[in-house]
Length: 335
Image 1 (cartoon, rainbow, N blue to C red):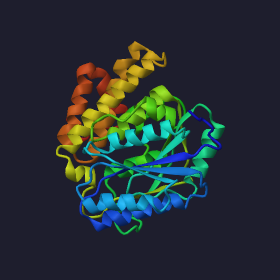
Image 2 (image 1 turned 120 degrees about the vertical axis):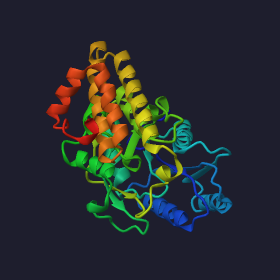
Image 3 (image 1 turned 30 degrees about the vertical axis):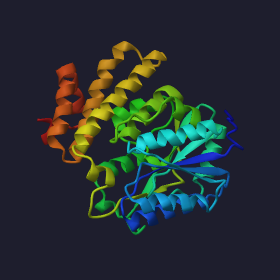
Image 4 (image 1 turned 180 degrees about the horizontal axis):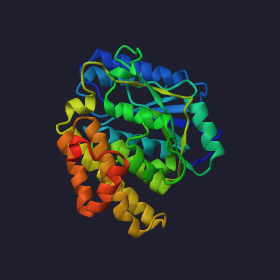
């Protein structure tokens, strides 16, 4: 595989699914235009359609490819498997075509014009890096900025993590799991192709990206934060995001997938000699407390309390000690 980070064509991977909705078409057009507006023009796009129920949407993708047949690649799936599996197909395309690194871009988000230029420079100058990620600006369905007072607690938690000692370096999975929670938004994440190929997204349709990010860090290399290329992250106002609207029990599934991802990252790190077996209990206690904190901010009270109970099973005294240090022992979801 061509690993020329300076000269190889990068691949933007877009997972796509659309119902009979013209707004979704407009958002995809803006996402693609954001890639055409890149200051670094050495790229390909792979759009993987997850068996959209809208026939017109699939026809539109085929027509879109004609805009630039050498740059835009469209793969129409015959099954509906979720965005993670779609990204895996795009990753395989990038791997087979010698693309040195991948930039994920959701079908309704917009990349910063210098995203590719910056990512290429950082990967070229940091040979041990697996992931380059940035912050983001939230926009609404009409591409207008959304003020922070209108954002959910989970989104605010991510932005707070970017402002206050953002995650970087080796073993980023530990800091993400026990201190920050979800850190790198899909549309602001770039990864070396061999890392993405070796650690594919799981089949789950909830939090599949967090599962992958943890394993990228545990097995693939270091994280780099690039604050100057914020992506535009679209959150329609007054209605839930697509994944939360379509998936029953979203938060309970998120808790399960996040836990599975952290456990897998820990297993990979132990195999590589990065952590010791005796560290496992302490890491899991801290992980459960952090997950509970995140769920509590989203008012998922019982689910948050369940995570703390899991930590208590491992060690009641250690859990109480950490809760006290984090000033969390008085919160209602801890009781």
